[in-house]
Image 1 (cartoon, one colour):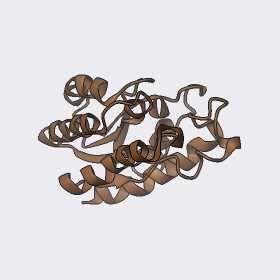
Image 2: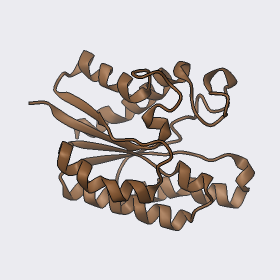
Image 3: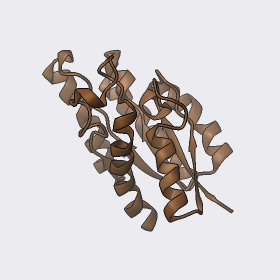
Length: 184
C-alpha cells in the first residue's frame, strides 16, 4: 500500500494560473514515481488560504490521507493581508502539533512577502519559519521561491505567482529537503 504525503498550502502549491498538472506538487509526485513508487502525494492546497484556513482544514485532511509526511506551505496570505505574525506562528505550530500527533513528520515550507510591507513587518513575518522550526525541532525549507521570485521570466504577470518555467526549480528545491526527512 502506498504511503501518503500531504501538501497543505495556498496558491503557490495549488498551481494558481498554471495548466492542470504543471505545478510543483504534480512534479514532486512524478519524482516519487521515478524513484520510489511507494509514495502518493495528495494536494489539499487552496488559493488564497491563510494559516487560519489551514488550521480549520487540517484535521479532515489528516484523517482522510493518514500521511507519513505533511508539507506545510502556508503563511504568505497572512503576510499579504498584514495579519499578525504571532497568530500565524501559533496557527502553524498547532498544525505541526496535530500532524505529529497523527504520526506524520512535518516539513515547513517558508515564504516571503514583498518589501513594500516595511522591513520590520517583513522580518517578523519571515522569522516565524526558522523560529518555529527551531522551537519545534522540525526541518524547514528556506524561501521556496528564492531562485525564481526575482526572475521576471519565471513569474506570472502579477509578480507573486511563479509560472510553469519555475515549477521544476521549486519541486527540485523541496525534493532535496524531503529525502532526509523520509530517511529519518
